[in-house]
Length: 92
Image (cartoon, rainbow, N blue to C red; front, side, top):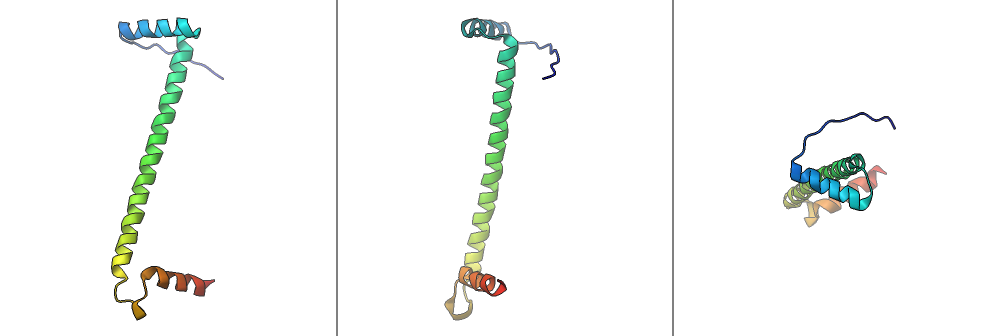
């Protein structure tokens, strides 16, 4: 793995906490920062993916509701889902 140096500024209290943690866990500050970044980025990506899925699910639920509302008045009192199934079966 190629590495690059990074110069960051953190509050003194944070630095003290980092140093204490690293000393207790016998890890370097570099390792701690790498690990924290990796975990944070993974959590943000997962959160965005969940938000995207929720948005898609809300859209699907709304579309389904609209379809149910439009199913009134179909031939012989059939529901829209039944008509769709019949259409799919004919297309096979």
